[in-house]
Structure formats: C-alpha cells, structure tokens
Length: 20
Image (cartoon, rainbow, N blue to C red):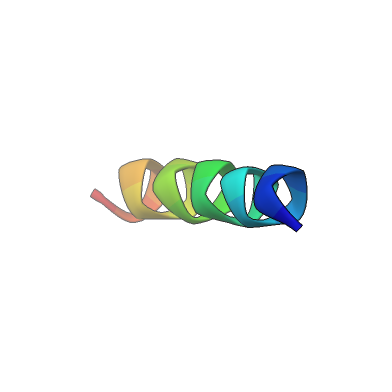
C-alpha cells in the first residue's frame, strides 16, 4: 500500500513538473 502511494506521488510530481 505504501509503495503504491509513493509511486503515485512520484508520477504526479513528474506530471506537475512537465506541465510547469
């Protein structure tokens, strides 16, 4: 569960950086 959440956060950060 924790690993999955961490991976989701990592992907979100990548998307945010791409948009910005």
